[in-house]
Length: 394
Figure (cartoon, rainbow, N blue to C red):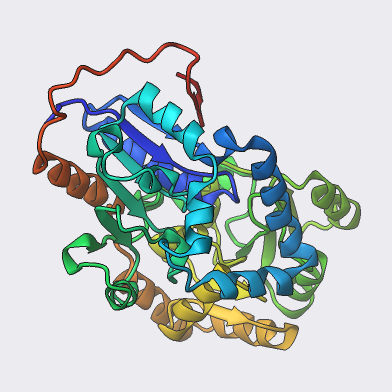
């Protein structure tokens, strides 16, 4: 096997989770001395206008058309890659994808987002480069599936059974857990972090996370409920939604129990400080909280994959889900009981899978090593400025 293979990680900026998973996998490759790793928002490259339109629909539907998004999600959940809808979605921009692959000549392609045009191009393209998929939720959707995928890396044994029922070969399914950044699996001193963020050690904090784009609905109502019905203070993350942050500042700037922030790269530190996460049900955020043994309440999960995540993890008694204000108040009071908290934390520790990114990278390298060499073809040198990645141009 090439000791320094070219790795292409296909991701997307629909939300923040797909990029975070890609970053965790890229970091694991680089920690092994494999430095030709390129993380690309492939759909944005081949269809920038359609990508932006789709992204805006996704973000706006989270606020204004949740039912419509949920309906579309359910209607497409059973889609098959060889039927009309699957072929349409996976073939969009196929020629431009072919050009990118011809320029880059990857030895490995890894999907952290289900835009599978590289798989649709077929086994005979790019010398049959092996293709892997890392799923970023706790529920299965048909859009992730493709017969040219060599291995699927998934969160749970339940998802494994779902894949097997779809006809996926048993040796193509690996229960790895969802990869997260290393910082979430590293011990941090809470007292030092409290001082760093200017917070009081004798107060308990709820971390209210509205998502990377601040799309969590009823943020003001949630703040009011927590302040009125519990002794917790709040750290409120408004993401990149500057309008939301401005509105919250007008309401709570003078309230000493409410600490308002925008988007942060210090999520792991704020989780370490907090006693509870009150959040959407994005697969990555939930996985990060579980790794930190931070009790979670999901409030009114969005229809689609987030509702699926919340429902599945709640059934396992790993997190709590509140569908209305009354349930939220009840769960806040439960979390104030030491016995209940200890049981939730115990379940989270038992559920969490450590070093998922390292496990995935090891499996991929082993799988690639067992394949035939690159057919002896010389790889053309990538010209600077040729292919755009998440981190800039190559």
